[in-house]
Image 1 (cartoon, rainbow, N blue to C red):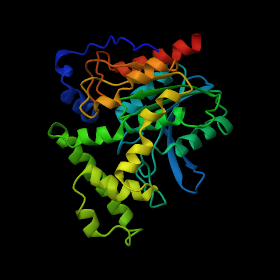
Image 2: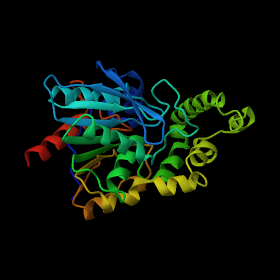
Image 3: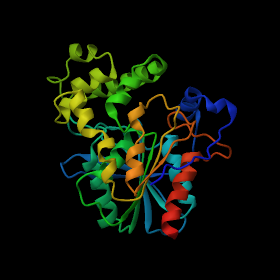
Amino acid sequence: MPILQSTFKPRFQFKNGFIATVYSGIIRTVKLQQTRERMDTRDGDFLDLDWSYAKAKSDAVIILLHGLEGHAQRPYVTGTAKLFNENGMDALCMNFRGCSGTDNRFYRSYHSGATNDLDDVIQHCIHNKKYSKIYLQGISLGGNVVLKYVGEERQVPDEVKAAIGISVPAYLDGSSTELQKLINRPFAIRFRKHLLDKLRIKQRQFPELLSDKKLSDIKTLREFDDFYTSKAHGFKDAMDYYTQCSSLQFAKDIKVPTLVINALNDTFLSAKCYPVKEAKQNANLYLEMPDYGGHVGFIQKGGVYYNEMRALEFVKSLKSS
């Protein structure tokens, strides 16, 4: 599809990508009542799913996936859930393994390409919850998972009607490099701290794999991926993980209508994170590249973010076509 022209025009102070990113990640609040369900995965682990509902019974649900070291109560997730609830659709905010406040059972946890867990949740919505219309939205890391899922060599269920990716690091190696730059150092330090805190919890269960010395040697996010993410999930090293899991390579094969919104001033994204060529060649892929928005910082007046409004517009346009 042709590249979409964006109409996003933030207030002056939020044209700064750093300010927009920090405000959205730390300051924004959204009130939403959620109900938790624990679901077993196919390999014997579990996922915690946080539900919110439309006022009337709905046959449609949006499944929302958070970003690196996020969870289902983050405002960038609950903002979309609330808007869809208000427009007649249920919302399932999926916590990745170990991100719900309770450590998962295994040494492995989650990563940017772990699509089997998403598939388990989709099957749960189809067979146990009886939804006939399912929409997927992933933010940041979750966006990479969603795009990979709908572009992989798999039969996407007919019930999955559309996918949406926001601030997607579609080329993981490039995004990893960007996060090490000076402008992103506060974010990289924060991510690294949270990830290491998680490993220290796992250390109680797997002391032979996670010594204090090994944890103290991890100084960067790439070193974390080299030591833990790759090895725990069956990859050779960080580069092998990035290569196999980057959603960019799957974009040409995306099978359902998919909207990607990546801001041009998102400092987390490298040039290859914008699938321009793929969008032009794949009729199912719609790419919107606003000048502003930072990383998940599409702030506009009224409390509803631009990306949330666009996600709803995209879904409604498909329902009416």
